[in-house]
Amino acid sequence: MLPLTAAFEAVAQMFSTNSFNEQEAKRTLVGLVRDLRGIAFAFNAKTSFMMLFEWIYPSYMPILQRAIELWYHDPACTTPVLKLMAELVHNRSQRLQFDVSSPNGILLFRETSKMITMYGNRILTLGEVPKDQVYALKLKGISICFSMLKAALSGSYVNFGVFRLYGDDALDNALQTFIKLLLSIPHSDLLDYPKLSQSYYSLLEVLTQDHMNFIASLEPHVIMYILSSISEGLTAL
Image (cartoon, rainbow, N blue to C red; front, side):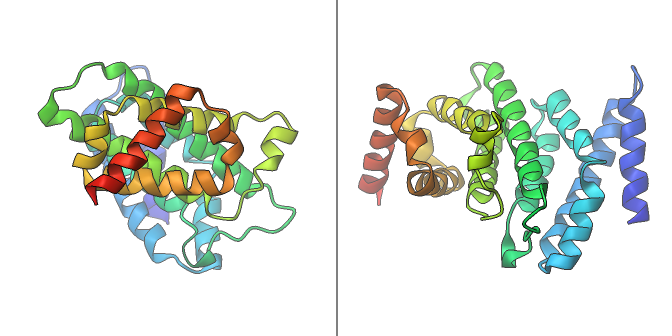
């Protein structure tokens, strides 16, 4: 992992200065996170994946968060970072099995929530996006966030009751950001883009199975939006 460590340290060094070569930083970071995503995808055993997780968290997670904060408007940068995070929270082959006393599952979800919330709140500030660019600039990132949240909610490595017990708003922030992002998408776009449709309906299924209290607490117009999206989705089959 030494070359990857050196790359992360180089990006961290750039971020620590007031003026840095933005294009060089983007190029280094994008290459790095693509390599890491490939490694994470290949690590299906618990032992190897835990080594990767303990290497990247907490040392280098702030760099990924900072990249989303700075370059949320640039999908060439945000897409690889979001895809890496979505891969890290995917409990493929039960590789994310933490000890009973370990807080790592909760810590990982906190980072997931932070990234979704940061990206979501910033991408909504873009305003009107031309129709021919809306998927690349906005909807693709939102789709990855939906997939990321679905993987984190259904991974069976987080006791979500802990967040309410200790007054931690990570879960609520992620769910509220999902709603804000959803309401920014016309129904027609949900059906026009297959990857967005798949990520949305898969996430909605998890929410209605395990987080019905949240669904029931939504404002009537939000519930109507969701019901309409289900109806239109069924009609489109």
